[in-house]
Amino acid sequence: MAKTIKEINERIKKGKAVVVTAEEIIDLVKKRGIKRCAREVDVVTTATFGPMCSSGVFINFGHTKPKIKVGGGKVYLNDVPAYGGLAAVDLYLGASALPDDDPRNRVYPGEFRYGGGHVIEDLVAGKDVRLVASGYGTDCYPRKKLETKINIKDLDKAILYNPRNVYQNYNVAINLSDRVIYTYMGVLQPRLGNANYCSAGQLSPLFNDPYYETIGIGTRIFLGGGIGYVAWSGTQHNPRVKRTKKGIPKGPAGTLALIGNLEKMSSKWLRGTSFTGYGATLTVGIGIPIPILNERILRFTAVEDSQIYAPVIDYSKAYPLGKETIIKEVSYAELHSGSIKIKGKEIPTSSLSSYFKAREIANILKGWIKRKKFFLTQPVTPLP
Image (cartoon, rainbow, N blue to C red; front, side, top):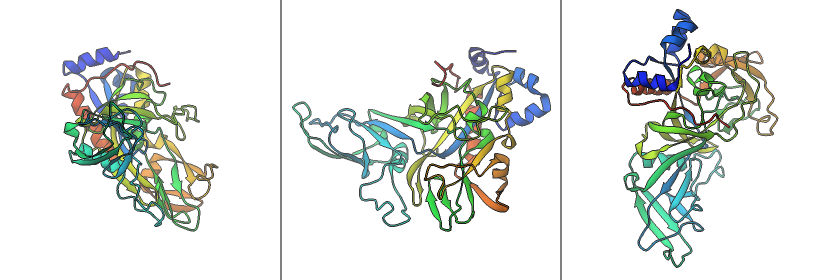
C-alpha cells in the first residue's frame, strides 16, 4: 500500500496522523510487522544534536546614516571576524571564526573560549552583539567606520545557512601514539586510552533514509528550534561509499546543506562550542520527518544500532596524513555500550553528540506534527 505526502498532510490536518520516533518504530515493527506498520504509521521522526563546524549565519544589519559599504573593509561581531564581501551591509559569520587576538594553539593546547558559534548563540539568545566595521568610502556609501550594537530583533534579516550538516555516519577516533592529541573529535588519550564518535545512530536522519528517497531539496525540518529546509546536498556529500546489505553506509557519506530563519530559533538548540586544542564550532539540533510512503521506506526507519557500523580510525598519524586505514568496524550498539575492543584492549567510548537531546528533538517534532503545527513538504528534487 503506497501513500503520498499530500495524503499524509491531509491526515495531519484532520488530527489522524500516526507519528512515532525512530526509536519507537523499532519496537512497533517487531510487534506488528513491516506490512501492518507501513499501513498504520504515517511519519517517523529522526533527530541529531551535535557539533557541526560547517555552519554559519547571513546577516543584513541595515543601512546606517550616513551609509557604509563593508565589502572591501573589515567587520567584526564581538571581536570575531565576519565576511563582508557580499554587499554593503550583508555579512556571513562562520561558526569556526576566531578573534584576531585569540592565541589559538600558540599556548598549547588552546582553549578557544569564544568564536563564531558563540556569537551565533548570543544572537539567537537575544543578546546585544557589538558590530565594528570599516569601509573604503564611495560616493554612495561615504562612511568609513562604524561601531554599534546589533540585536536579532532589530536586524533586517538573520538567516542560518549551514553548508554541511547531518553527516551520514562518521569515524570513530582513537589515538595510537604515546601522547595526548587534541582533535575535532575531542581529546584522545594515548595508547588507545579512549574512543570518540559523533552520531545519534538509529535516531540519526540519514540512517533512516539511507538512499535519500524522502529527504531532498525543499524538505521541511526542525532546525535549531525553528523551521528550516534542506537547501542542497552538503559539501563533501558522498553517497558512493561502501554500504551494508541493508543499505547503511559504512563510513562518512551523505551530508545536507540547511537553511532557516535564525530569528525563530532557540539558543537551546544552537550552542557555541569549544574544542580544546582544535577550535570553536556550533552544536546544532536538527530533526527530520520521514514520511512512510511504502514498506521499503518503513523498513529503513526500523534500523537499529546493532545494524549500523562505523570505521575506527587512528587520528594520531593515519588521519592527519590522509592514510585513513580502517582498523576495525564497530556497531553503534557497541559504541553505546560504553566500550569497544581494539587490539585486544577494552577502550572506553564517548559521544560528541547527545543521544538524549536527539531523542528530545524527535519527540518535539512528533508533537508539532500531532498538534498540526508542522506539515511535510514534497522535495523539489532529489539531492544532487
